[in-house]
Amino acid sequence: MTRFKNYMNAFVFTLLVGALLAAFPAMASEPMEGALLMQEAATSSAQRIHDFHDMLLVIITGICLFVLLLLVFVVIRFNKRANPTPSKVTHNVPLEIIWTVVPVIILIIIAVPSFKLLYKNDRIAEPEMTLKITGYQWYWGYEYPDHDGIAFQSYMVPTDELKEGQRRLLSTDNVVVLPIETDIAILVTANDVIHSWTIPAFGVKIDAIPMRTNETWFRIEKPGVYYGQCSEICGKDHSFMPIEVHAVTKEEFKAWVEKAKEEFAQSDVPAIGSEQPIKLTALAQ
Image (cartoon, rainbow, N blue to C red; front, side, top):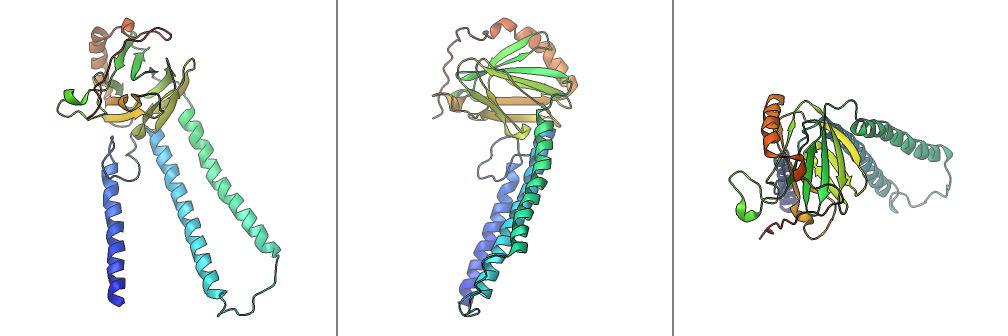
């Protein structure tokens, strides 16, 4: 019996260690196989979300441990053998006050930082640039209103056309280029059905709704390539409209803008309400 318990303890320990090790690959700008937890925060908005999550995790863990210990105490102290004569007390005013007041205090502790998080992540205070995003079936359209009307469409790179370094189901033909250390306002709408522009590393998930413009903002803290996908079921190719963002320094962004002015033209992006060009993507095998 003792040997069996030792084996079980070793097995549980191995599972815990494996879970912790598996969590490290999650700290990336793209989904990782077998990863746990959230992707590493790349914006101040995502970092605030992660901090709030960590606080809730502590509170939830404390509550679960307290309830577990309370159940163990009740089982040991008030079982039939230890307590053959049960109490007939039906009310305890101090206890009822405690179990009413304590949850209220916990909710207040959660509510205050929650309201701060919602306000800071939603507030657009004097953005330094604006990116307009339009969801189509099934691709994204991007416009840079502050940079001479740069606009383009972004489609998923088909599996049979992937180049070295590109990600299956995540890489796009025209990538979004954004500067770091810049307050960026995001305007999101749709031309046909509801989509959702989502990048986990940015802490952004905002619906794109036809005839309506939703707003958010973020500030990218470090350069890198960040991926996302449409997170609202929008039709048969919902799984094939990814998002690829290249975060670069301000100097690199200025150089890209000069090049993009020649490569893209405002007329290349159809206006809302117009018929959209059909571009079929090769489905993943």
